[in-house]
Image 1 (cartoon, rainbow, N blue to C red):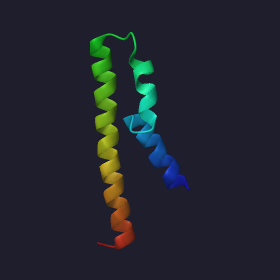
Image 2 (cartoon, rainbow, N blue to C red):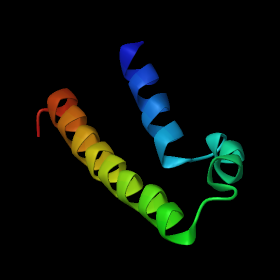
Image 3 (cartoon, helix red, strand yellow):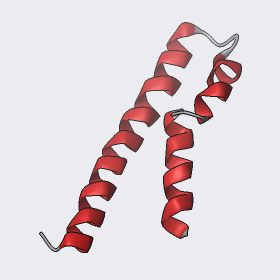
Image 4 (spheres, rainbow, N blue to C red):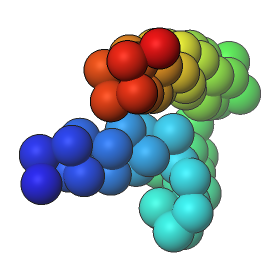
Length: 64
């Protein structure tokens, strides 16, 4: 159950569907440089973490 909640929180941070609905509200009215910084860096970090999490989780389950 905890893995599902962690995965949902990371998908929310990535603004993946169905969480993409709130993204325009967050960045509305912000300067372009700020939006670029806040939209790209956390998403890259979370994406790298998801890949690492996925690989380690599959490695633990399958034993490869």
